[in-house]
Image (cartoon, rainbow, N blue to C red; front, side, top):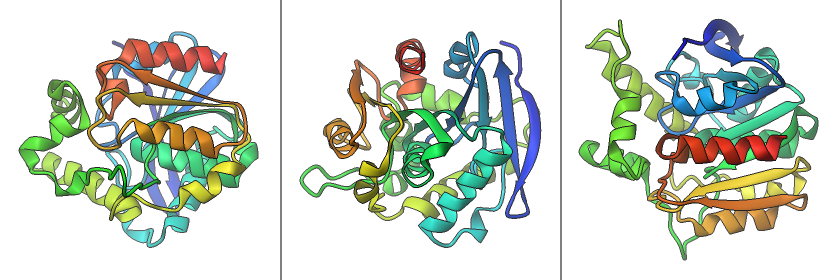
Length: 259
């Protein structure tokens, strides 16, 4: 696996890493819980036919600046800046989990920023009849099995990359969890449901069959809220971060939708 190219952009005066790889039309990826400590097979699959651009959200691995974001609106505007500076305005956008919630918000509030949209189990809704799990309340040894159907996929994602400082790395991963919490804790309910009807981009909603964070029933709620062309697909055997559990299936569905 060849490494992506790396550049840095500033959002609110703080550095955010932007990874790029592939050729063809651009597609952006906003990662889920935990961010992108490393390049992953799912993105390599997309990069076979698309130029994949993966900017790091503030506070996620490769980026700082999350402590300057006090409200959900602060976060949405920061993500819009990040999309602008990464050169993704008007391109296709894939967002998962935490990143999926932001991708949906940007598509709703700034419709010209997103051509086609893929949402992989996005945060932003809460149904007390099907309550979401609180990822920040999990014991450390349980997080892997909550995030992925195959816990080994989460463990591989968050393992220290080559050259990482073994003392500082756990701090960096804790920072990523804190950044997500600043945007979505408690309960992950941001009122996104009210803004879903504003989404104009053709949207594919993907959900892991074994999602232990957001019950798969949320997929229908997301799709029902979007007035435009929307399709739901459940990925067999996959968990919350379905792109880690089922890179081949998720990439195939994503590319078919973006074609």
